[in-house]
Image (cartoon, rainbow, N blue to C red; front, side, top):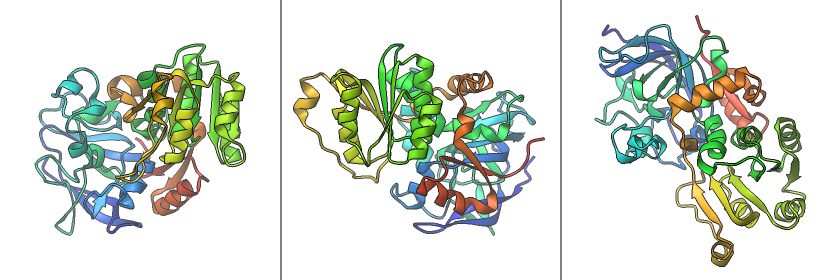
Length: 374
């Protein structure tokens, strides 16, 4: 049981990349850990901003945090999963602090250290190249590798009658958008919602708003193909923010009132201002877009205070992964949450092309295939 796994991993050696495929070894799982043979891993905006050091994690590092695979081995204390189980890997958390205990693990008091520290909490790593450690444990997984180490806490057992290679993005991006609407904002039936940014997160939010029964759902983006897809997935209106004033459009659609909820997923401070200005009285703007550390935004304080508007940050859709991910899978299986329309698959050898296509907006949600499920 102490035997290392031989793996192929995408390593970021320097700021700005590229992802470089390397032969590495992955330690056997410790007592509370799980070794997963990766089938596929979604690529998320956060992978790119860490590659580019917008978030200054230590390098060299193995990224990837939307993993799906098959359990290969488990540590002696693991009881949640067994070899052969299909799993999705989500963010990790301590499970002991007041926020974890109250059902908000995405706001764990140790979230940054556990997910973006570049290793285990004791400073060790599981991945080595030629005997030299590489930083890992990104979101508790570093799943841009053919094998990855996770723990019981951030691993979710999933049903086997859905395509495993499709499910990785439920660990972060898709859950972030859907959870922002269903968990954080609590969009209600008959209410109005606008998604500023119609990438994978924004489109997931639009699908969730339709599930919640929102009757006015507005997509804002600058790419016509995304706006068209948004309408196919549930948006009742769409506006190109490059050719029209999105705030004026939303006010016009809502009879001058604005919408009850907005979600900003672009990370652009100017777009955030539009998302706030588009709110009705007592409306709420959720913020999930991740700009470089230190980015500041501005708004008129009176336009926030007098109408009683709210702005709140949202991490990982404020979800409990063991509960929320299986719910989304059930909805997908019923045809009510067709997130498969967002994805495009790439072999591991094309991981840098996947990143380029994502950054250009040509691909909404790249998924990197590692191996086939058995």
